[in-house]
Amino acid sequence: MLFSSAIFLFFFLPILLFTYYLAPKKLKNTVLFGASLAFYTYGEQKLVLLLIASIAVDYLAAILIESGKRKLGLYFSLVFNVSILAYFKYAAFAFENYHAFLHYFGVQTSFFNEMPNITLPLGISFFTFQTMSYTIDVYRGSVKANRNIINFGTYVTMFPQLVAGPIVRYVDIEKQLQNRSFSTQQFAQGVERFILGLAKKMLIANNLAFIAEGAFNLPVEQLSTGFAWFGVIAYSLQIYFDFSGYSDMAIGLGKMFGLDLLENFNYPYVSKSVREFWKRWHISLSTWFKDYLYIPLGGNRKGAKRTYLNLIIVFFITGLWHGASWNFVVWGMIHGFFIILEKIGLEKILKKVGVFFQRIYTLLVVVIAWVFFKAYHLPEAIAYLKKMFTFSISETEQIPSFYLRTEGLVAFILAMLFSTKIYKVLSTKYHIEKYGSLKIIFLLILFGLSIMYIAVDSYNPFIYFRF
Image (tube, rainbow, N blue to C red):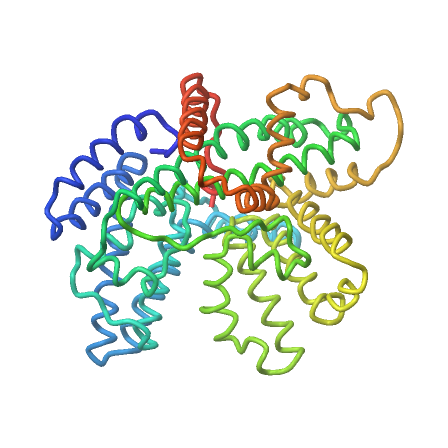
């Protein structure tokens, strides 16, 4: 079930809100827990048992840690979560590379010759990281183990962020699980945030997808240099508005249920370095890797060489976390490589050339890296990049008019504008909050337009559902 679906907007959400606010305060978590399990079961059927198993394991692991069996509890959690992630997400990838390695060296073997078809559970990358952060924090003494299985289950399964984040750490929501306040102002803020996120997805991201898919699906010999750049820039904007739109909807839904979830994006495309980009993009993931991998590896405390090695490890795993493909690994390593260059001295050079060139440099690195993220195989990504930098002129070196639809061009322009801080600056300068009635009309128009797109099935799945 997707937030941008009719069954969610007009059936699941209204019934849940009605039930949730009628329920006594002590039963609200029970209602939310049950609804979240139903939400997940609707799309995943029997795979909900994996989610329930994850809840049970980490609930017991935290209690083991507090009872004095610290390492047993921690390893119980880590081994379980890493194992299910390895099996469901990476087993097929390992199988393919195993056979490719043997084939390269001319080795013939019937051992492990067939791989069963494995269904990737939605959100497995998110809920495993979320529950691991909980048991690690209990082990570190940062939080106490939650002995209320309903409250803990609510934390793990909260449907707003269950399948595509943001990754919510227990320490950030512990008090809200036990006692949270409700207000009409908070609910109204949640509705507003949800509508804005829905509009980002339906009106901007989906129209940009038409351009991006067109460019990446064309045979490379038919792809012009101009269309290659247009396509990857469209994809760069699409993935931002798609994922940040989902995060906005998740944060908005959280507010409707009295929960304040942390921000996940902060205008990443205005960054002046790749390192700054990762402070603004998918903030919940980058902070997770920083706190639970980079710092435990030693961070920058053990000399320059060890720092660079730690960054390589972190960005290798960051890439692999996004998907079982070498394309994602290359994408992650590109980011890691430039962050290392910036630490070595590139950042000092960039500061001397001015903000404009800093941002151009960052955008070039990020956009070029997105080619590997979007393409399904390395040869496709490399061929696409070659076309981007083949500056020949011919009759075919143009953008096909078929992809220059008005909707797509309008979405492209809006995306360029609103990926910057222009709205934030204008709202502060002209005190937009004073025009409350106009804002309500504007939000209703956005919601109506989004519903029109849903009604005609002008829809693409959220990109991050792949991961």
